[in-house]
Length: 491
Ligand code: P53
Image (tube, rainbow, N blue to C red; front, top):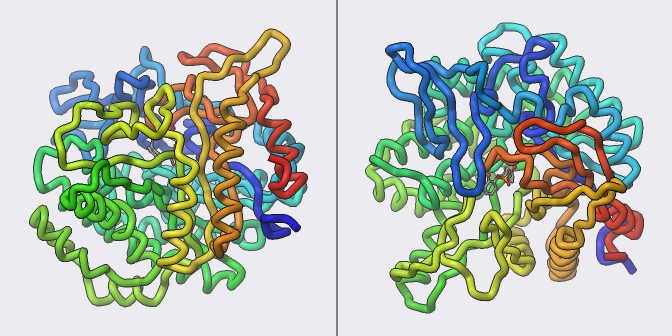
């Protein structure tokens, strides 16, 4: 008997800005990643802008950090922007989808770029070329019986809204987002039924503590306010999705990091629990249960935060919880109140090194048991169907002269995580699907590199834009094909 349900949704995931390219084609407007340079494990990505006196400037890209007064984002002609071309999915999606079909995908997670439909976010009517592009992609997927799972916002607010309103801490964003997502639900009715309103919605708060450069309580004020607006926007999206098509299923999308106390000092235990509350449960509770948890008051008090919210907001949130719990999972994090110099300090990771785990070149731990822990904990708390919508190993693969890529380390990583998925299912978790991240190589979000690859398909695009963009099947491609064909038995 199979350990996975017979209609288990095996697939893969990408996002628009990391894969599409065509950044100024088809009437698309600019988004943050279009003004972001590449970086590396040791040097951060930068945002390019013109200051109030007309000078070129670079701002280190960091959670919660904003442009100075009077500045404007700008694209510099002599700078390299990795997301402008990305892997050219915009022009090559047919070839890519054929490869996904060859692996036997049942589901494919992708995102719609808000700026392809509403270039500045404020147009009254959507850009037809953008709608047509996504209809073509969805139809191509259905040709192979692949179900799209669509993220509506993958860190890509229209840049015009960031500049004019300061982004999501401004309430105005809710109504503009409502217009955008309602357009999606209407236009893509019958083509899409799985929707994720916000990618890793909890990051803005969790990352502020983990590796933010917090200069004032105002940053917490903005983060909590931004989250509240996204909670309300999610509630609106759930309501509209259900009204427009009762078949629609909407999920929260949480960056799933299990926190471990580095010692058994009660101070570490409590501190660790508070990390779970702030990083994971705060967002999960509001979106799944429809209410702010009791500990919200403690969190707000911690940084003297006053979240502006109306009775109507709370009613919408209460009446429209999400239908499923979806999350990304890469690694666990190790927390302590003690002084410990053995810190991880990679790219987008923080905390104390866990002596029981191995770390990637980018400082991300490999912890398959952490996935089971997260699955069982979350299912026990919320009892909603779960899909793991990101998981994988970022590594510097080598393309051999004969077109092969021997990525046994990636196979090993995925195999161990799938084992733990099976164990969690055996323990009662209602896990419905698995879409490993960057199933075709794409631009890393954190480091802006092409070198940090996750794919089962290799893309010949190199660090500074060299390469043919040709696609190659890695060893993991053939392995995953077998995994799907055997419904997770042949690992
Ligand atoms: P990259 C940090 C930690 C966990 C998840 O990340 C994260 C990040 C942000 O870097 O984001 C998700 O590309 C995100 C994807 C991203 C993926 O993880 O830095 O949803 O867009 O590409 C992997 O290796």
